[in-house]
Image (tube, rainbow, N blue to C red):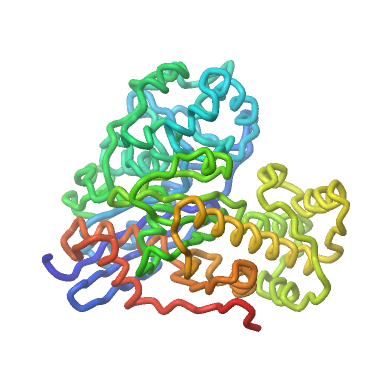
Length: 479
């Protein structure tokens, strides 16, 4: 270990992106973050469907990185994480159109065409993933079946963080933790499943070589270095490029008896294991086995998450009347009458639009009372998420054999006191909330270890997190 140093973390979420300057000194036990830039990440609806504005996003993160190097010229490396499953197709190094958004409607019809070739039971045995209609394995079927799809033209496919790494270095690779979410990586082999790819008719040649968190992609391209004002020798390091993989690195777990909830747009609820769980019970519970840093397995369930609240607020604000979220949550906490608990994972809540109307529709179909005010809608959403989180923790415990004694909530949801308290109440298990910036912290720590600013296993890295950030504790039944 060579001592203290600094790295730059690019953390791209489904609604916003950030560039974080991280400073690590394991010998002194210090871990510091400085948010250099924050920018919106909003989808764009084109004639062809819902897309990501990756060109605009790259411009925003480049400006953030340039400011990072102005603040600290000694930054040793850059790491990039993002949401999962979405990808760009390239030919000759040029991107063939803006990538589709995972919430685009094209995926629904593609599911059946995949399952006709490979039934879901077999898919689960091969890839260990819960059924989500937007997994890359289904998106590629939609691409293949489209009249004007680009898959036949492409010579490479890069997931979002790998695409950013390619633009910075020219290296075309696929980082393992994110690749594991595609449905095309063997859960046991941890390699591309060539047989599955061939059976589905996808061109095997487009899939880049797999790399692991901590591997170097090399130095910056001359043009990228000039744009960022950075030395060419600055490395881009593969991190847990699926944002949840990075977030779990920063969960300050001290024993196997803990569960985690990485809560933002999505709520990822699970436990960390050494081996996947591929039982019929796990498949029927729709639990996923995703790749983690250092070969760990993230046995988890995707819950719709704070998307339900943020998209409801966006719908209410469409007439130009802004809503203060803290005031809305305070009003929700003051609701004393019972509110309906709905199924937070109902597929109708996936697409953008009138989520309050869809919640009312769900209530009407199930013969229960719909919320009447915005405060009641917010409270109903919080209660429904807390129940879904508590249920997922119970199921994760049963499937894995982990006797969960503590639930760690990290990410933006750690700031939502009502959600944390109600999750503790409904699960009967204490909740430790924080750190909020877990994804960026995990990104920073994997880079720091690669650069020699830290060493040891995940437990050693988590000890740094525990020393630097004090979580807030929520006891079941506390008021």
